Length: 386
Ligand code: PMP
Image 1: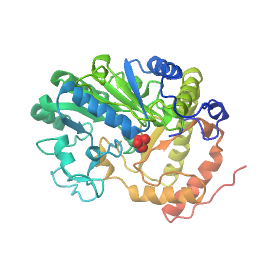
Image 2 (image 1 turned 90 degrees about the horizontal axis):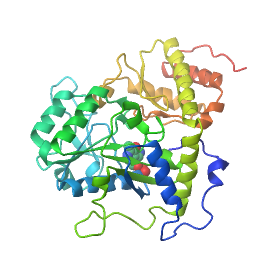
Image 3 (image 1 turned 180 degrees about the vertical axis):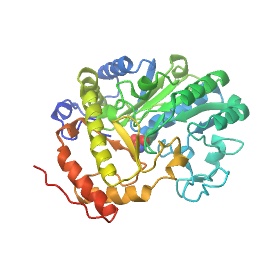
Image 4 (image 1 turned 90 degrees about the vertical axis):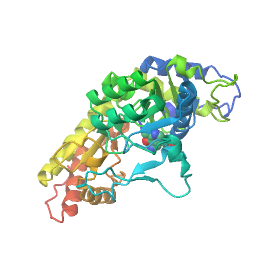
């Protein structure tokens, strides 16, 4: 995901011209590790990967190798890449919201090995619902001592940036520590975006392992995972160690892109700009929704905010089902028609980049007014941009 802009010569000009593979350390990889460690103090050791999916796979395998346990839990509404065992979700569309029952857990799609759910949880797959203390306590009571890791996006970048409360996240942290389970923060979306140190800097709560991708290379294919030294030390080709690597990991293109991107993020006020522009855009949209008398609430930080057509800030993915996401879909498709290229599914937050600072907010307000009026089937007067 782009954090600064698409056409940045300050990054493109820094991309390696010495080919893709070096086969050994170029020295620049060590520099990137130092950059990351300065911004993310919980990273004591780390490994490179090519995509978020790969980083998650590496982190989960490392957690299993370190703990000697198999079970991994994760949170409803989160997304952790395209590997079979992470591709299970709750069927909210088919869920009777008024019943006390939990929604059914289903695979993302065809072709997945059914036994991967069993692998996640030998006694039946159970996802956790964000901010549900009762469910969290019950989970750890029953499964804590067999859990290798709990994986979470603390700000769910794949469910409208619904946020874990600090209290709930702290309780999750404490329960993981108590039961010897590792806490993995998947910061593929929030990393190097919501703050230099990602969601962990905002919460002041730190994971044992973290995954990063997207913003770290401003769109170039680079990712990594890392964390506690004692945990990462289980990786190695020595007898019994966790195996990790790959032909393209830490390749020259990826490393030089990460180096150029992180240099800007660390040493300029790019993220402050992203934050300011995101705040301004939320204000514009808030005015548009107010003008149409639409109950709404925003969630998540300005760099990746979610829009919810509902009165109360949603606390978990199940709450999303109770919103008017159909109206949002109509609004979003109309915006696309007028040239605002966004994902029309309300579960996808608005990801702001530094280049958005040149956007004409008046124009945005006009087209958003028009898009919402059409979505509501009301004709509103549209003021012209100066
Ligand atoms: N984790 C999270 C939180 C993601 O949002 C994504 C992708 N959207 C992934 C992992 C997988 O990353 P990739 O597409 O780079 O494999």
